[in-house]
Length: 467
Image (cartoon, rainbow, N blue to C red; front, side, top):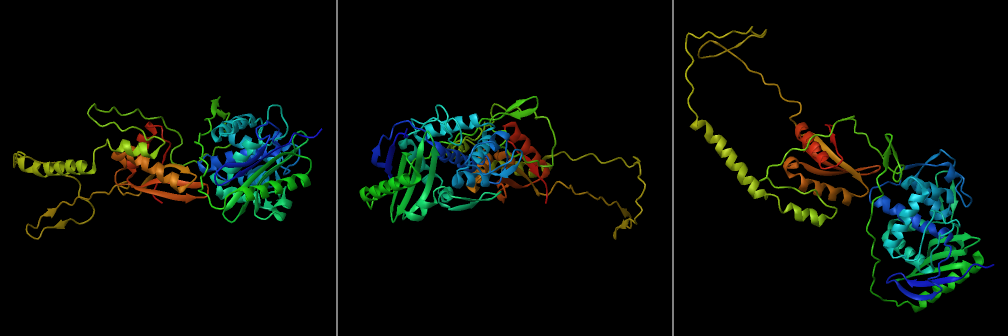
């Protein structure tokens, strides 16, 4: 029995539907599912949850998935970037399951995250049960929803979209070939996106092509073979280019709000649940274990600094309630002036009685210096400089997926802790796994105080010593 047929054509620039047939029928999406799997990965990388170089451990479940597959072994560790390439190009089921378990702890938890993301994208009739698209009860989508998803993949993450047009890719353990290299080679302007096939679904495909200023997305569910499916997609794309206007105001799809993965639960001292395998733990080497310091009481008259919110505008608005730099400078000048005037107002001490005998200290081995006027030995006082007095220390407040995100966190943190971080230098350092957000130019004491105050606010941080 042939699988039900459905199709849709959309102008990618505006989201306008140019053609549809059974576009809202809930059908088996097969490996079109992997578009959502990869969309969630791109979202996690963008927000610093993981990096493309994060090592993922392959479970027995992932290694035992049926073809198409990369050929992963249970217990093997492989970088996320290779799993992404295998899922996008080869449509590997074992790579998709490994991704799901690596990011969410289990495939079921990852599927729930896929469904939350689908709702945020406006995919109202889609329900995911797994990360690869193999037939499972209740795992359904529509031609309309998959076309919407394809449009978001193109415009939300253009830096990764080229993955879907690669005819071959290095997947770490071997080089893989694209599942639909024929269409990429034969249709002018075609550059993706994803194929899918199961016996229940038939031959599915979401394809996009660009010609000049025009870009069209076409989706087919229920093709009878690779050949007939590709021929139908070519007809739909041709139809789209004929109906789409040459000049039109571009309207990018609205990117959904990012919701971080739930924090892993701690059971018997071990982390379990969502987010367990996807976390990267960095050890600072400075502190192994310490108790959380008690929060310092705040006087009623002191300004209360509210912890920076997720939105930068909120943080800037909160900063306006703090004393202005002019006010702080004026208060400092008054304090200095008062300190300078204090000695003039102090009472002159009473002269020491001549008959008072002082205890003498054993002279130092070195010869005392002699005054030219009195020929008497002058006591020399040597003050040892503090090793921590130099402003060569810093505080790290996390590693993030982009320079902009790191700079944003530094600004919000500086606004929230102006007292201890005043005069420090906000510095973003690019590392292999992301961008480190650092406050530099502090003394050891001020860095320690700043870190303890930030920890009191629930901000993870550690001190950075002189290099």
